[in-house]
Image (cartoon, rainbow, N blue to C red):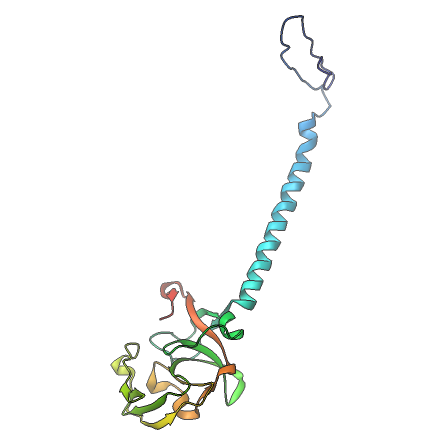
Length: 211
C-alpha cells in the first residue's frame, strides 16, 4: 500500500494496480520544491570546482609548457612584428630535452644584460663555421638558403669566419638591417635560451604558427 504523501492518500482495490497519486495541501511544499535549492547548490559547487581545476591546469601549462610573450622591436620582421603576442614553448628547453635546431626562433637572456630578453633565429650550431659575406650567411663553407629574409631586409655587412663554441649558438634577426644580434655581440650560451616561439595569438589577423 502506498504511503500518504503530502496529506493525500492512494488506495488500491483488490486485483487492480493502483495509479500513484500525490498532492500537497495549500501552504505545504512538495519534496521536489524542497530539494530544488539543494540541487542548485550542488550544481554551483560542481561548476566552481571545475572552474578552479581549469584555472589550475592553465597555470601549470603556462608555467611549465607555454608562456605568453610580447615582441618589442622590428628585428624579426616579416616573421614577427612589433607588439605581437605569441606563445613560446619553454618546457623542452628548460629541462634540456628538446634539441635546438638551425632555423628555430628562440627567446633568450641577452648575454650583455641578462635582465633583458631577445628573440632571434638560430643560424649557427655548436661547432659550425659561420661567416657573413656581403650580407649572405655561409655555414661550413656553403651559402645558407634563407627564404625568411626578404631582399629588402638584407644588408651588406660582413662578418669574418668564426667557429661556434661548444654549448653556444649564433643568432640573427630576420630584418638584418635593423637587428642587434650575434654579429655585434657574439654567441648565446645554451643555458640562456629558455623558449622557442611557436604560435602568434594576437593580433587576430596574424594568428598562426611561427615559421
